Image (cartoon, rainbow, N blue to C red; front, top):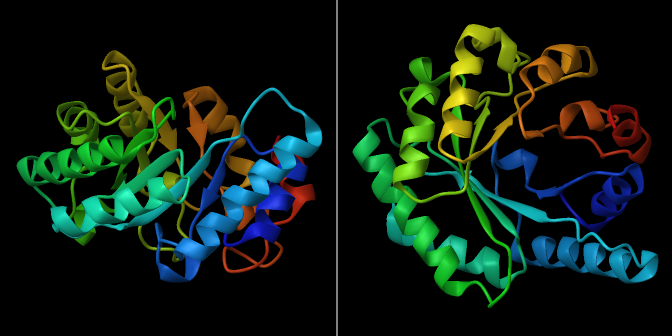
Length: 235
């Protein structure tokens, strides 16, 4: 979600995670610190009002990362300071495993060093379904990279929001080994990429830990406003 209003709609619809991002800035576009702070505040206010025992995590997308470990480590520290529970970094700017591990480690270490005692924090590394055409890290090696970087999870998303979905690029023969490799290493495994209601049977059969959605939850595509009723429909 882009702001506190969308966070409220997601909570009303029963979302499991509030995913803070700026869809105008790319697949994993980072929102501003003020937007992230407002989303965290909306989550905390809803928790106080409802008295619910479960705290909904706030995930912060922090960009389709270039190979700039220092800058990204600072971004991770800033997101943690704003109250994010989960951090997502897209490995679009690197193609080699060694580079990706080095970048991932810098992010993980900075995030954990800055996290308050007792905060549950997860760092999720992201590979893209179109990796071959955009020259980025192949999804099949992401679990190995994430484990070596001591990250907590892996996500496959689409980098290009051009109407094609995750399943236009990768089929079950590609995704099942990826999910098995994540589970074997104890990593959270997630799938996203312009997914729609009609994709649910295939997604449920694959059984990832998390499914990421935005466009299907908005009234006018991913640039539109997230709607509570659409969240309920997917739940």
